[in-house]
Image (cartoon, rainbow, N blue to C red):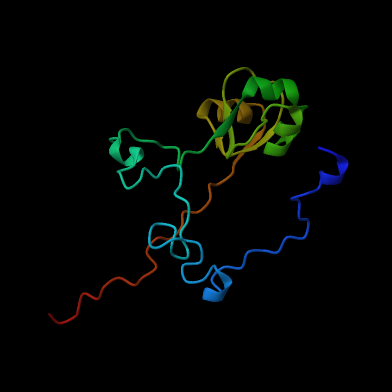
Length: 169
């Protein structure tokens, strides 16, 4: 091999093969797709990883067992009253943002739960999604206040009018 033949067989501006343009092109009629078969018609897609050649897929052959709350369960961050006493000053307002800033309620969650573990020596205003009875008693005993954040309203399911009962049968 020498340098004069290095580029032989390499075509930089090769024309695109145009198929389905009649018999004169050499690629007419079936347009290089063969006759019939899975890939012959337009819109044919490659089968997915789950496709088993028409055999019943594995996930459909296996029996379904168990139950999961995961679709509607909500995750709450738990904070004890004793931790609030250490992290906040007298008269502070305890909210989700304040707890996050203090490093007590980090990570993704649907809300905050305040539990009654530990002692409280300060007057605090607590605003949370859920506060236990013992925590409420400890907070109000020191002159603080507890405000519960209401949950989101449930969607109205049946928007149709109820059927008429006085209709003739």
